[in-house]
Length: 145
Image (cartoon, rainbow, N blue to C red; front, side, top):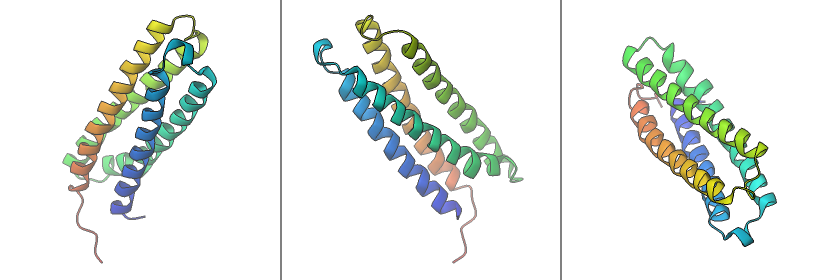
């Protein structure tokens, strides 16, 4: 797969993750009485799968090869992006672990606020990462046709 195709696949994964984030946001913005815990659990699982797939693509297809490419600037950029990606993934895993053990229904205001804050951080991370990936893509030599 060409570098251009990898970056395009990253954009597709980002769109899929953002759709999952939007669904999660719509579910958590309902009233307490209208909250559907089963739907949220399903959405959370699907979002987790989308984020994990996206992370694997970036790490194996872009970050790791860039780090060993011999291009110092590209390697530095990829390392910084990989660290930020791992941190965002760990934050999501910790969130899911915590709220899987604690009933969001029993602590609705805290759960709702925590979920909305995570959604904002995930969106911000994906937006920042999109720009960084686009910048990283310019660090590759053009693909011959």
